[in-house]
Length: 143
Image (cartoon, rainbow, N blue to C red):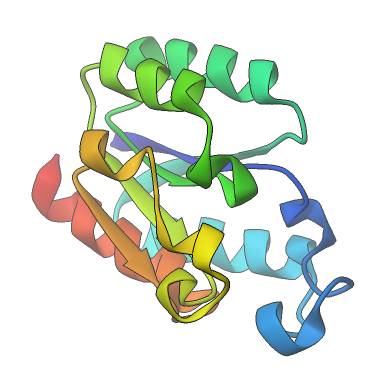
């Protein structure tokens, strides 16, 4: 069975609590359970990893090259300025799909640019928790 990583960046543990008008009211824990079930239904073994620390996310990206066949990443605000995450993704040889629950292109100007997009296989944004499901479906074709 193929293994995938779902990597979640800063503040994504607060989904369901913060900015409910943007991210909805479902908790991060509920969405994580649904992601794991969707992955299993699509013949993937999945691991969800969330951290509010850039270095921890970089370490997990480095580890992903040895343990996973593909990955989904919602880097949160790090998407817009973390060249360190960009370089980590570029250094590993597995496909990454960038995900955002909100439509980053319809929000504040600073959110409209992703420094990680050029090293990801693609970007899915604006479909709430379903963005993760779409990314997992995309990985089926990429792996």
